[in-house]
Amino acid sequence: MTAWQVHVEAPRKAVAALEALFSTLGGADEPPVVMSFEIVDDQLWGIDVVLDEPVDEAALAARVNDTLVRLGMDPAALEVTELAPVDWVAESLKHHQPVSAGRFYVYGSHHPKPALDRWSILIDAGMAFGTGQHETTAGCLRAIDMLARTGTARNPLDVGSGSGILAMAIAKAWPVKVLASDIDPEAVTVAIANARDNGVGGRMDVVTAVGLHHPVIRERGPYDLITANILAKPLIQLAGDLTRALEPGGVLVLSGFLKQQEAGVFAAYRHRGMRLLKRYLVGQWVTLVLGKR
Image (cartoon, rainbow, N blue to C red):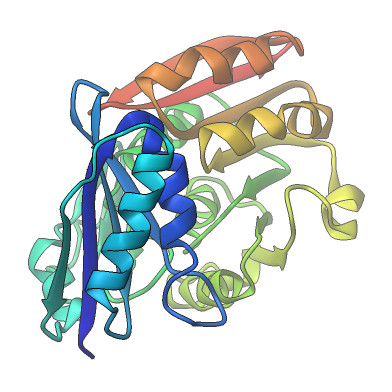
């Protein structure tokens, strides 16, 4: 399907206003995804949105420049590019390479089979909600591998499970029942299918939940291991709930945030009695292993 990408570059202080403007485009039931990124030293930023239908370029340029002028800034050039149809599954397969993290091996069905001494996790590249490629997943898998070498998980929980990679990793590392949750019902469906395909369906329960707000999550706590690979802001917001759900001596594995966000995330948990056990840095992404006093 053909799509159209809208791109504009503007000063940092205009980003929020332009994101709000772009989010109204498209005329769909759901707002389009707007992406903002730094170009030059936190001063010049790019704002992109991809639309499923063509846009009136002149009218949109006028709205963008009205916004900039209202903020006391110079007008900016608007670029609209028609994107040719792409087979995204085929494209992702080109770049989807196996991920090796500790004893874990995350691979697609088009890859060679892993060695018998690896904890293998099969995730195909066309599958939504995570194929294991991101640095945060590698950090979390390394943390789970380390914990499996030093102790035993009895009652684990994975929050924000996505494709279910971390929950499946826990189920392969320890012969226990794993509870996983995600805010997106479609992600829950994917995780259940992945667990079945990886031979751990009988030891993984997956529920749709916002944070820890689900009766099954409350009933099965407290937990001795909780993993949460989400984002910095929700991790800070969930600090109280996650630490309360963790039993004394339990372990949290947190990821989904950059180095510059680490201090804020760690402070939210340190103030709730958590101490740092291990830190993994993969690229610019941090994974923290925290213990409850």
